[in-house]
Length: 165
Image (cartoon, rainbow, N blue to C red):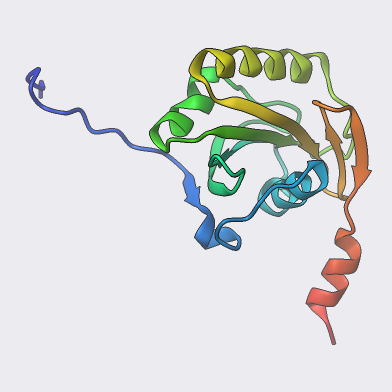
């Protein structure tokens, strides 16, 4: 089947989750800890690496979470066009990107640094700023590549409260 030049091609966003399904609508990411907490909720316990782009409006409220790729135990393939495809179509003003390290080690790799730099350069060309790049682990440790901050989420306490008596 061929499309005529006058027909619009169908564009599908694969695995783009509307925030209203996964978190309070209009969640504001106020810093690395808030970003890490949300990313941990989405992908922190996955048994393989996953790369996610959180799409933000001009007031830094999350409008969409886009699962860009799923990989293997110790890596996933990330290309700027896949990251920014959903951002452009959703009219995102900025992004927070992140991925998980199932191994539990939140230190960034050479590849992590390189893809963050590539995404920042692509974002500058498109006018969509990368605000942060976060690595999360199953145990709640996180690392912000943009400010070099290592932190720990209080997930054990939250889980105990959620499980309750």
